[in-house]
Length: 358
Image 1 (cartoon, rainbow, N blue to C red):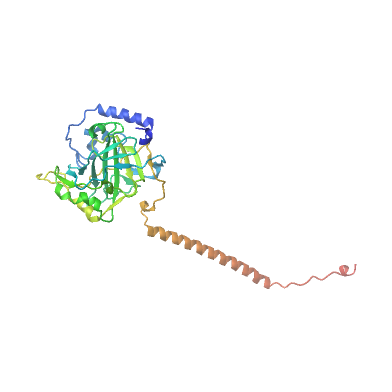
Image 2: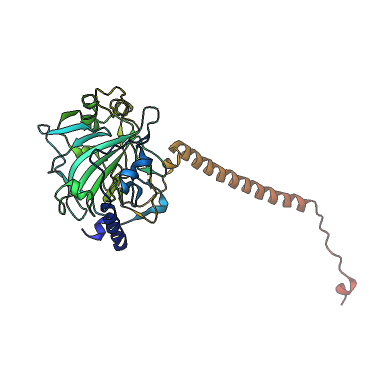
């Protein structure tokens, strides 16, 4: 794959390859290694069983102006096979960490230098009392939830398991989700959550257009080289995080936050599936390429349009007042001079005799 497609320098690629070689020399954890988001097997302990989680190029990250760089060479993504007939079936699964929808092998994206085939999508979210569960953030702001659509490089590797540990192996599309209007597209997933409440439960879901889960404007995005946000945290992911969020209703988000459990149906200590998002990672000496020109976005600074408009009006009024005051002072000064001139009596000078009689 061309370096341009990945936005990764030759030096960075060399470092990544060396890093992967070191990581693969470490014995891989046994299948089924336990990990959670909290507790003794939580995020801080991941690197003990999954060395990459404590390594380089980790995700998610925070997008802020200091690390963003506009790149005019970024290409629009082409989505193939995303529109599935309702007669076809997806499999929705509770895997104990998230709710996962398996995707068919004829679904892929192009525009990244290689063909990347879809394998699954899943979500990350917070909890009912703190509905801010996105993994990526913008200027420190969390969104309500986040959708990931995982693809692997099918031009280079036979399957996602192989690709996961190889350079240019994975590409993930990320969609930031905020509370707003009801989403029929996301309800294609959410309406089946009650059927996968417990770990390892599965249900068939009628096919639908996966592209409807993406924002309308898919040409504006953040692009960077990072990792999986769950163990084994493989640093082989080309991230495309769409700039514009999509909306789901408050009720839909609440269903996502309350419907699922990390434990099996017969577990005597059921554990709710909440706060399944990884914290933001360090982003040293890397740049995020963006496909759009940066603008000052006051909404991310916590300023509503009403506040911005009020400040603008106040500024205009302030200028008008200063201008009016200046004109009034100028007129008063001129008027004062005229009054002063009225009090002066001019007397013609008497000519000297010498001047009269030369």
